[in-house]
Amino acid sequence: MALQQPTPPIVMWSPRETDASRASWSFFRASNLATFPTEQTLLFTCYGARIGIFTNDTRRPSVLEALRPMLPPGWQPLPSAQGVCYYLVDVQEPEAGEVTYTVWMGSECLVEEVDQEVALDELASALHVTVSCHAPDDWLFVHAGVVAWNDRALVIPGVSHSGKTTLVKALVEAGATYYSDEFAVFDRQGRVHPYARPLGVRDSQGQVTKESVQALGGHAGTEPLPVALIVSAQYQPGAVWQPTSLSAGQGALRLLENTVLARTRSALALQVFERVMHTATALAGTRGEAASLALHLRALFARRVDERT
Image (cartoon, rainbow, N blue to C red; front, side):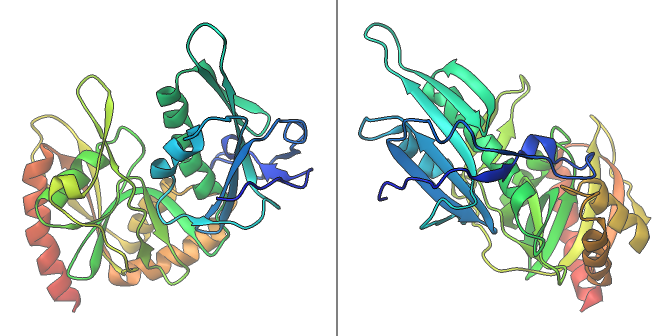
């Protein structure tokens, strides 16, 4: 990519100050970008969010080349840095010792003087947050896992550490098409779009390993789909899946509880979720092992799709 120099000042909003608990967006000017010794730039857009990553790294390949495989799914290059949310990757190469990396999100330091692996992991995680917070209101991001069967989507809303990735993995291994383990991305018509990043599978020690859907023997979806089933399933060792059917309002509430920027986009969310619930059935319950529930959901999903059809 050709080197791009921004035209400061660039206005951005901080994703860390725009979660669902805030009623308004805070912003600041990119004062430290104007003086940063940029050598390379990576500019891209994803679901309408405009993002720029700048580094002083003079090496080839640079840290930005290492970052490319970790960018949010479906990203496209941008020709200009105007109006981007920006990140700085400050690479320090001492005459003696290891190369260190400091990552800035606007004027906020994410990590300081760490190795490349840690820096890239932190940056990649922050980029997903930025996309979800800065996508225009044509899109609504919900923390959820998503898979599909027979051109209908199954959505599993839940916060981090709720077990949704484990269940998504089991569903993919049971033959479902992979859409996301992090975000259900809804359009205004209530259809869910793919956000097929590598699955972040957490082990018993809390360590996260990235696994591609191909490594699981599955494949990722590409087309937007209507939702047929919403499953809110909290993991409890030894539990037997005996779900409760939720009303349309309760199903919409489960989605709203996990919506990024729920307060600032509440009117849009209610409009979208009303449309979702025209085609979807919602269930809630406590689950045991994911593999067992995946087989049950596959059969249940097929029946519900037939009934709706």
